[in-house]
Length: 165
Image (cartoon, rainbow, N blue to C red):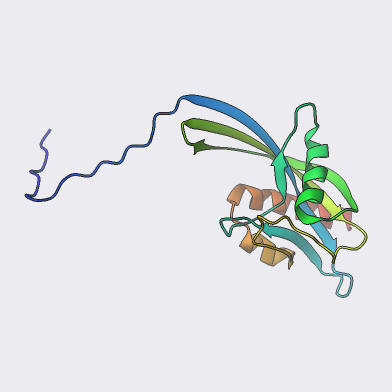
């Protein structure tokens, strides 16, 4: 195989990532949270903006012995301050992987459809969140940073429409 000659004075820079020492499996759970706007009756979704400015849904790690549905409700309470909700349907799961230093993390995220009830205006997000807002459903789909979550949001919207909620 023919390799091009190096150009004088220019060093070839090769950046190598550290070797992966282990692979771990982690499970998270969260929710596509919806409401009817009390004034307009327009369907809205609650999104959070994470520390990297990506719009997503509230979610977090499943604790040992905890069911994903319970985790979704707990994490929504912790991250948004929303207290009154109805965890409705399991929408599906998303599998992905990423590196954390020398570890390959194999992630499974369970996503539920969650109806916000009661006072949905008084939200109190955790400090690490950059923002949290109710978006009209069609705007939320455009805002979401992760394609697989966006697809499950569409599944949830169809279930809301089909049930005429």
